[in-house]
Amino acid sequence: MRPHYDPVGATVPEQSLRLDLDQVYWHGSERFTGFLGETVPSGNYEFQGFRDGVLEGPSGELSPDGDLVFEEWYQRNTLHGITRRFRPDGTLANATGYEYGVAIWTVRFDVDGRTVLSTDRTELTPGVVRSLEMMRADVPMPPLLGPEYAADLNRH
Image (cartoon, rainbow, N blue to C red; front, top):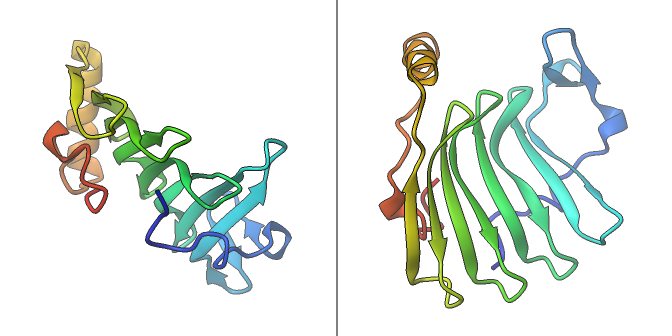
């Protein structure tokens, strides 16, 4: 499964960026928007998407052939959205919905990548529930999509 964006072609060298004390990436005098990436020893290409200097949008890993190994989505430097892992043949293996970095649900798929084997919801402790409520109030983000969107690669 190839992504609908090009993290390799849009990558800039990390040495051309500067990271400030607030963990914001700068490209010259502007907050960085684009991709950072590198080829890792396995031959795969790991990448991270940025907008306005922080993690935003897709991050993940591509096989040497350019197919997604996994893809995760960030908003405002926080894992928030649907993370998907793919098998070597490109079929979807599983998807997990994250809200403010907390895994909320996971869907596992059969080898065809379409048939749902299981859907599990995370049992959140009262402390985690309170933390999520505070984050929702302090840093509003779009609501996490439900597990019914796990296989919809156009929804994040």
